[in-house]
Length: 122
Image (cartoon, rainbow, N blue to C red):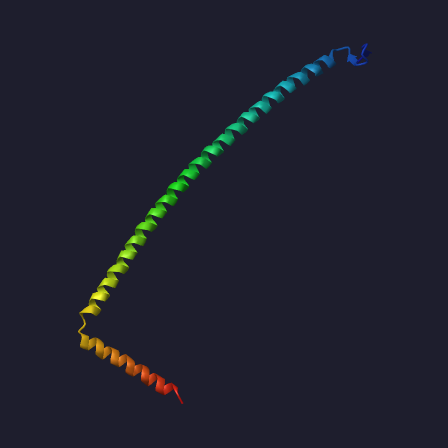
């Protein structure tokens, strides 16, 4: 292959290989620009999909937390109601005891305390 020198000192092949090389470079640059644009589009779509998924997750999480809070409040109210009912039942049972029974129980408690105290002292 014979080469000639152009006035700007760039070698040019007799078969036009430099012009083909420049054309190939231009086509590759166009393809690269198109690929970069497509990659940017895909990235933007992925970012948007991630934001949408994150928003959906946040919404689902908020709904789940609200449901748990509601369930907890309901269970707590039910348990407090049970405790209050038990308290009322026990109060009513104690109030139904005759005074003589209460006095006898109190005497028994005092007697047991006195026995425990006298056993522990040397």
